[in-house]
Image 1 (cartoon, rainbow, N blue to C red):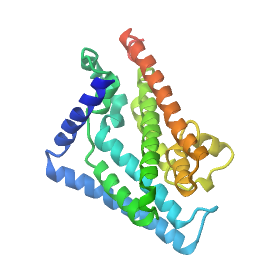
Image 2 (cartoon, rainbow, N blue to C red):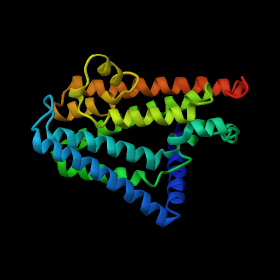
Image 3 (tube, rainbow, N blue to C red):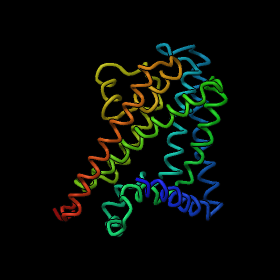
Length: 260
């Protein structure tokens, strides 16, 4: 674990430097994502200009939710960008080179890429959190904790989706679609979910633990709310590690989707 903590920042920094190499491409992707997110925010601003609340969710609550998910997706893409096409890396056989190296395979997979567009998510997300989320500086430590836990759940879910590539040939597009759906579910107020849909967003598509529970924690801090957020991060991380290691063991035995 000590080796991972010491080498991962170096690996991620190298990926970030590579993403900055083509400045024009970087600025275009970053700017495009920032404009896209700004347009999405504007739609919600217009919505709440006509409706004061949706099931108890006001404009500030929605801004907090959007700020959290955009910042989480931004950090994921900048510092853990390999998650986005991890299924493709597995299916293409590129993972073979990593198996001969001493460091954990998952860490190297996550740090192999940094997405320029993610900087647009990160910048806009932070602007929304600071400018529209109505958070005080006293809440900064709690907000960082909630953000970290949401980040763990998001990366865990996306990695679990990508790990399906150890079992299925069509997992590359399927994993990306599932991750996109996860972001979509995390972009709407919790009040719209009920019944079966609410069960889904707190299990298979854990938007509830990525943004909804963190928003609840920031609006009504308490040990119970904190326990839910932290507990979800731990549980999803452990499940994903188990799924990935199970798939990796299968891969090492030669039981790939193309041959077994």
